[in-house]
Image (cartoon, rainbow, N blue to C red; front, side, top):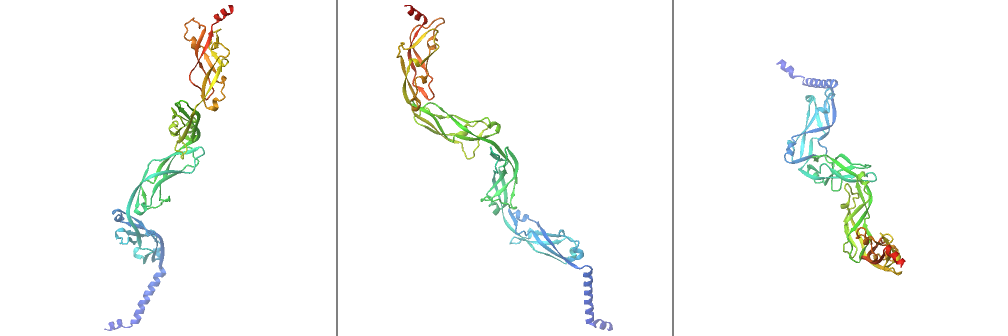
Length: 437
């Protein structure tokens, strides 16, 4: 009883002793190993069980960088904090715990001295997601060039080893993609280019789309650029056939354009100085101008192509056809030349009279034939047409013969029909007999 009375007496003193002991313990503890606070920044959140979304044919996008905790504040004794790093903080978001509003709680785990940690306070506690259906699209892969090749060269063609790219991602993102393309800078080049180029995606306004939520089956492709030399050459045209009777070609052929830019390897291009069209202008039987179009690409030599991307190769051609003018020219004896005259024979026009002559009809442009003289027609009679049929040793007999006259008229002048005239041939013996009498 005495013992119990002693135990229950002096309560105030006993309580004060307990409090004093606690304070002393606290002071001793904090003096030797005080509690410290440390902030660790940018703690990445690890995802688990993401198949909850992907197996449903959906994709997710993390909103507002919520998969990174900007800071985690750790409170622990100094001896613990001194040997603690951000690597000891594990943040996990388990998608199986996703809420109806598409947020996933973040669980913080301490991997070192967890029992000695007073508190762990993250600046954020959940990952916010945007969840959409997974969309896939296949796009034709375009190819372009930028910059300018050296003078005298052009980009002839651009091709890729693959012509399609398949993209997938959130429906809203895929819907923004309008096209896929690659571009090669050709500045200063004079020869073909082969290079690997990254594929870029563009929206309908031509803006590049850079979105990590999009995946592509290929991210780069081999691009081949063909670069050719160019030069400008004239186009030459040839007609076929003849206009209707009484009509003629003036010789004027108008082409729009008159020249064409061609492209090819330098070694091939150096051999081509013009493009000739030989079979497209048929004037047979025409009584007025021929107006037609010619695809000049059909007449390019092998290894040569059109060198102007703005020109489709179609030329508009006009061939001038006009009525012929006619004029009669009198050919006197002095304007006739004789070829292959047998030795010592005398040949005269007609019967040898001083006024012997014949006429010929000439045709052509009025301005061409108006001043043509007999001498300009170069009338020639070839006596071989009489002697060719003689037997060996046989001589041409004296007499009157009808022969054909040939002409060499100036350019643009034609002879109407065949001209035949009479000549008198006198053999040498007959000439001597006449002088004796």
